[in-house]
Image (cartoon, one colour):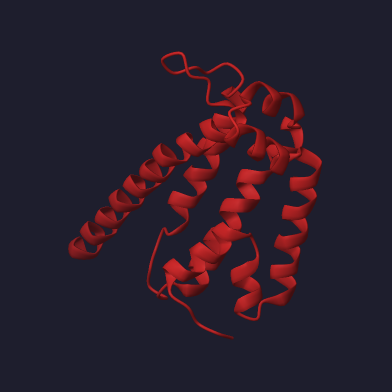
Length: 159
């Protein structure tokens, strides 16, 4: 199996969930992620909602998107990225999942509240608001990861 850097692994999976797994010879897992992404994407009308959002047609994006299907997307997307990251990370790295897990939580919440949220008269909608919510999700997960790392160090020093 081909090894790659953590950054390369995550970037390939940002492009399309499952690509890193396919590139590293994890074919069953890679195909599973690709198929799941395709099923969720088609059933949620995600690509059409992305296109409409980038064209400034947020109201139309909200009308075409299927929230029930799209709510599965953040978890699969972030899990496939974490799986790629985990494959590339050093063996001793702990708690690497936390930024990915909290990113998925926050993106899902951002999607759920997106029909109601407006910032200074701007309604980000079902595509941009979850993207905005990803940032605090990654930060919260990263902070918790650092706190746990410090706790692990203090525990090791005490022993």
